[in-house]
Length: 406
Image (cartoon, rainbow, N blue to C red):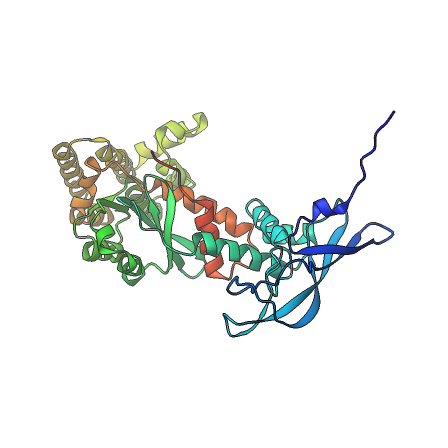
């Protein structure tokens, strides 16, 4: 004999302090309404202070959106009480547990929206749940502010600092990363000395004194800020940014040589930009003859190409004295090239010698931040309403919470 279990919707609405009094569904099952009222067995509780308050001032009704029930969009229409709280000394809304005062959705739907926003864009979530995107953004931002609104300065020893482009017209954000864990610690608007100073100024002195090293590119405002606030920290210049800067020199030299070349020589130099910038290992087989012809054709391009490879080898040394000799030899070769832009670049390296040699002690680089940059670009592409800088920063910190290191 078959046994049957009686079904009740109450188990799907496990809200204390209230009880369901009615329910209805539209004929096409697209919309469901659940009527709720306070349970008289419970004394009202002030939402502001949490104290029991038996004095009821007035009652009101409102509707909030809840989690969908199968294909039905669920709305809770509930009665709530406004109480005279002796502890707060004013009239407050009673605490019901399943919804915040003046919220448009229940607490559990808000949490669901926040979880969806971790893997979907605001626009996609709004479309899925048939909500205004501004409501979705506001809910997600509230959760993010609770978790990532502050700055956690604990256990910081090695930092990576870089800027990311937020849009056109040199609009930048400065990112500070906890290098060992990959956690975004802080993001500030701009890329000035004052921008990074704002980060260090808010950091307790005890934590600033624990900073051992900061890896960055050769950007004077950042250098000045670190030296001012973390005098004990070693500044480290990473290979990526130095090579990136020298690649611009290579391209300038190529453009100059192209303008001086004959028509036949121009045919060989034209389209060779990325041949000169690529690592040998990344060259395709069909590109190698073109590169060989190019280097045999032009002495200046041959020189900068060799200097590029020699520059990268400086970062392979583990001992400071060996790296120092390699840097001195590189600068001497650059001087002998008699190429003005290369000589100027060599002088720049000599000026930042200490930061280059510090890599021997701290083998760190901003490669992690380049990965951050790439992911943040994806976040921007998927964004909807990211004119709100604060929200963008919160989403960035959520995307890079860091890994736990035992």
